[in-house]
Length: 109
Ligand SMILES: [Zn+2]
Image 1: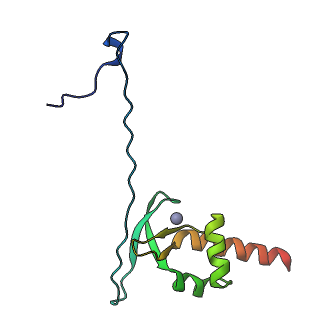
Image 2: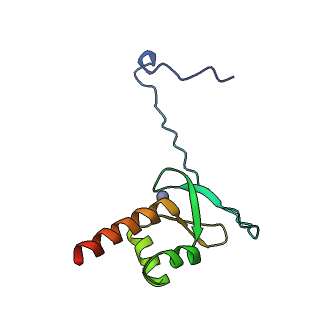
Image 3: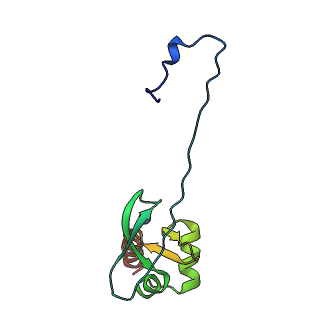
């Protein structure tokens, strides 16, 4: 029976301390067709966000698919990969990216 954490101060001097770590991955399974939002955990934002398909994201940004993927790889856009290998783009990171692009274009004028 688990009764809680051991009191490390009261352990005998030759006792071994074992650190147990746990890593988990989240798999997204998407079934769409009814126009509903996709929501999932974004590791970049560390919270649940709205996710867009790569096609949806590319239609919103002023660059093509290749450039969008390059920006995902560079970390300026967040994305998660589904269990079937599709990229889903974090909508909040896309909004921040678009705001920064607008500021940059305003400064260039
Ligand atoms: Zn994010």
